[in-house]
Amino acid sequence: MIMFDLPMTTSQNRRDYRKFRKALINEGCLMMQYSIYVRVCPSRQSAKFLEKRIKLFAPPAGTVQTMMVTEAQYQTMNFIVGEQSQDIRNSAARTIVI
Image 1 (spheres, rainbow, N blue to C red):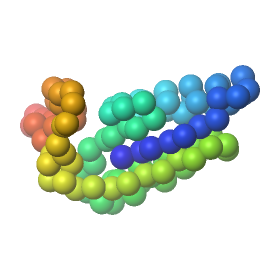
Image 2: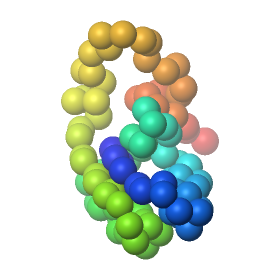
Image 3: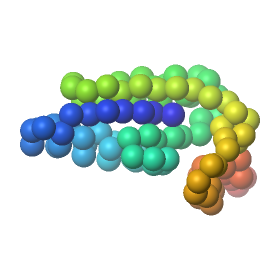
Image 4: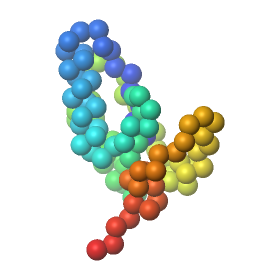
């Protein structure tokens, strides 16, 4: 889970925000809420690798945080208002056998 709060006061800040958001999407992350993106990783090692990649393109200003939760913990999330996304990339059914 990647959470961020980036400044939007200058045109450079807004440009950095757009580049960061686009890079997260290119890494396979899905927007869970504004400024909160998630990606399912098959192992802790791959999650650490993703975290290192995010450090490479994180903007210089603002706050960017990551949090690792297991798939089981993520699936026990309760929705008070709203509904869970039916996107297969965000579920345990994402495994493709070729």
